[in-house]
Image (tube, rainbow, N blue to C red):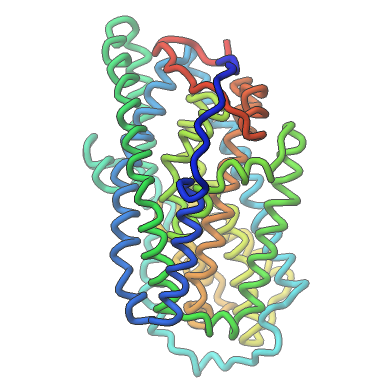
Amino acid sequence: MQPTLAVPPPVVLPWYRHLYVQVLVAIALGALLGHFAPGTGEAMKPLGDAFIKLVKMIIGPVIFLTIVTGIAGMTHLRTVGRVFGKAMAYFLFFSTLALVVGLVVANVVQPGAGMNVNVADLDRSVVDGYVSKSHELTLVGFVLDMIPDTLVSAFTGGNILQVLLVSVLFGIALALSGDRGRPVADFLESLTIPVFRLVRILMQAAPIGAFGAIAFTIGKYGLGVLVQLGWLVGSFYLTSLLFVLVILGTVCRLCGFSVLKLIRYLKAELLLVLGTSSSESALPALMEKMEHAGCGKQVVGLVVPTGYSFNLDGTNIYMTLAALFIAQATNTELTLGHQVTLLLVAMLSSKGAAGVTGAGFITLAATLAVVPEVPVAGMALILGVDRFMSECRSLTNFIGNAVATVVVARWENALDRTRLAAVLDGQAVAPIAPPHPVRAMGH
């Protein structure tokens, strides 16, 4: 672990030069444009799409370099399996807990009660496209989809799991190469410097991307739909907030840090996720910030990309809450047995959707397709507000993965607690010096 070094106070930037302020202003301006000039707001969509494509362009190299240099620095390769095992155990527990929380809240709040919607009056055609995609989310298809057609296609297909697999295998091969692989490891270590510099350059366009994305969302879907289904949206946002503050907050306290301080530390990235409705837009920045906060590079490289596929707390809360909302709105009686079945199916379908971009609505379709008691056509009820709930899903998923990274790093003795405390308190700490490629982690 790197010691926390005292450094001179940084140059204080004017308030308007801070990225989070710029993103916040962009979100406000985009919302105003979308509300008062819907047509113009919809036309801003390419700005948001272009920024997300720019970030996705760099996600593959960031994951590859972080994982490969991290594994190459491990003295014992069984550490890789140990970190994966601990991460997956954490993901499985909290993902299942999120499903249960959504189920409980839906039964207590009953956001769909009293709507008395006739299923026959719903336009099923608007959700048919999502239902057809959900049929592709099988376990076998998921496993096969993890394997890229070629070594290079993993980086061109935009599938995080494929990049993760190639990176882990290459990192292990490089570690087994010993001294003969050291020049390659040194080169990749040096390459991380300009790649992360590129990430910081791309982040300067974040306000433009957030402006375009939020203007499109408000312009296309409007705020009126929120009034119609406000009880559902409000229940989801409140449940997600309580999950983060109470459940994840307790986990953070047990690990010796504050979830509120972590949220403050990641405020620029969270605003970016809010503006773009995509947690992937902040993935490279999250990896860099978690390493800066004292989490071992090896843990960051393995936990963050895996968590983006398997640790979807917000998506899981949404799935059970939305499913029961549809049942309540259509007066569909669900016994305890039906709800348990729904929970078990959601556990499997949420894993089958790993790596599918924007999979929340598709995963819900896959779940309802297996539980015939809940009419799939009822998804038409929530299609209009799904975009607004997508933002909350992304925020919750993002925070959940940040917490998971710190927790697993602590379990692995790969967390510099002094540095973490200093960073979360807003103190200036020296950047982490690039480690030698063959240095061991936590030994």
